View 1 (tube, rainbow, N blue to C red):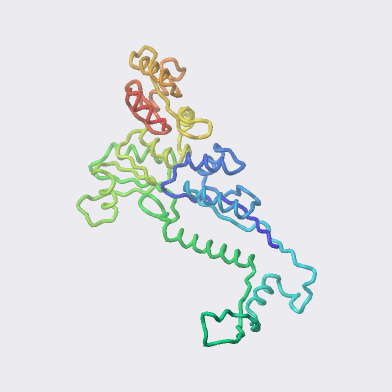
View 2 (view 1 turned 30 degrees about the vertical axis):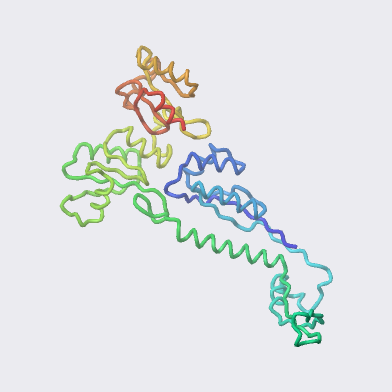
Length: 353
């Protein structure tokens, strides 16, 4: 009897449309690591073994569930052994057991005779029995199952190869997001501000100066496709930015790379916008004497919605918070790295879904 076990490995490659919060939660649910550790693993894009040894049925099921959320999983044999019966002492003992079985399977089987009595009532022309020659081959059930499993694996990887698109606009050939900046000679201060901010943060990026007259240029076509004819235009993976604001750049980088390129003060502030498991939550910034803020606070509590309510004027580092988050009016809300406005409770409720 054969027993196969597999190692379940996160390869560090992810689909470009992945929702990292959902993927982290899914990894935490089906592995020993926590969702927070899974989020850090996704952001680092490193390979890691989730299970060192697992039955093949469970391993393939976990692989299917995680790849549905955009996580590439690789299975490697962890343990394979064979139990051979003691009476197998023929001339093929020196051959590996599996090869010997395959050899025996393809050996020519002699025809066997079966004496069969046939009811000839419906066939009056004959009145004698006949001999039927049978050459039926009994296939081992284990061999059939292994062959089916191999065919399924080949089909699965072939299907994945023709359906998984890991390249495209904003991604390199391996499916990893890249940062591209598009500027124009007419865009001076704002374009310089974005480029300077990226350099200070040490973000690897590609810079393209677009000539709007060269309409056949590939980079012009890419800019035209996504930018809404605006400069500066920044693309990182599937996320885009069409202004030079600091919070806009944080949203772009944070959504694409997590906290990797954030400053220490930004990491501290934006950590309040996430639950402990790494999933985004609502954070509302207000002033203690603002009537609209107070009314919104009461409505959200009545609606039994969980959120972070931050009164900026009561903080010790008020000026730093206002400058970093570019707070210009109150209330101002975030969900994770994304900034939003509004006081409609029903609209805010949709942000929780």
